[in-house]
Image (cartoon, rainbow, N blue to C red; front, side, top):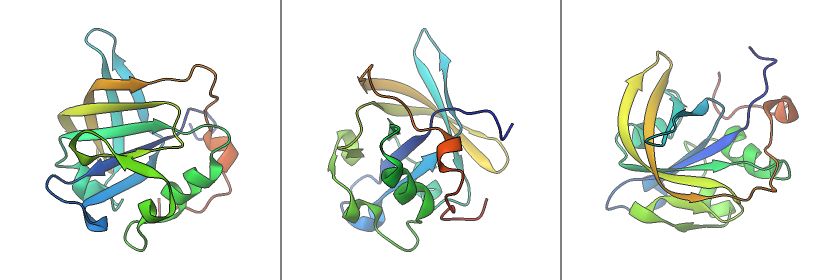
Length: 157
C-alpha cells in the first residue's frame, strides 16, 4: 500500500471561543476520501498521536485543504513540524473561516465541513464530514506522497 499514491491534504481546526495559538491546529493527512455522493460526504482520518487530534476529536467544523504540487513547503510545515513545538499558523498566511477554522490562503482547493460522526479506526480517528463550502480550482495538480517521501514527520509514525 505504501506504493499507492493519493492526494495529500492539510486539515485545520479551531476550538470554539478561542483565538490564541493553542486554540488552532492543523496537520498533513494522507487518509481522506469522498464517501458519499448524495448527500455529499467526505471522510478524513487523523492520527491519534498528532497535536491536532485533541481539537479535532471534539470540533464541529474542519477545513480540508488539497495540497498542490507546488506547495511542498506547506506540506513540510504541516507534516514535518508539530504543533507541540511551534505555531504553524505564525509562519503561513491564513484567515479565520466559519467557526474560526483557519483557512490557508495558498490553498486553491478546500472543503469547509461540519463534523457529522467520529469513528475509531485504531491508531486513527475517522471524521465523517458534511461539506457546506467548497473552493475548487480545476487546473491545480495535487501533491503526492511519493513527492515528499524524504520528509521527516513531526511525530513518529
